[in-house]
Length: 63
Image 1 (tube, rainbow, N blue to C red):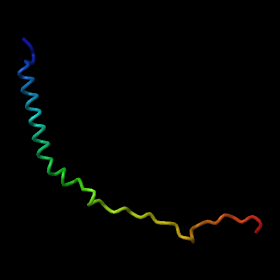
Image 2 (image 1 turned 30 degrees about the vertical axis):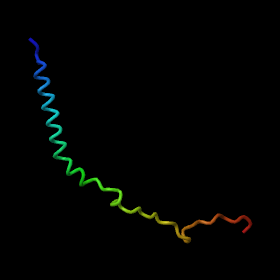
Image 3 (image 1 turned 135 degrees about the vertical axis):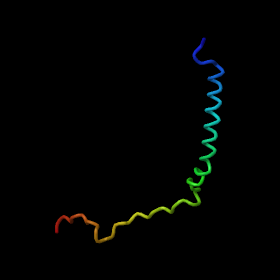
Image 4 (image 1 turned 60 degrees about the vertical axis):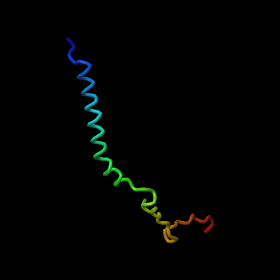
């Protein structure tokens, strides 16, 4: 007598597969709402550029 018959393993695998498909189907609508299309992506942020008052000029030799 085997501990797990092949019918039991097959039924559990079919049940697991159907359960996984049900869970994936239930969550598919919520996942599509969370993923934004490229047309709705946020605009790129401009990086601040340094102003002239913060630029350190190299020292002049001879002054």
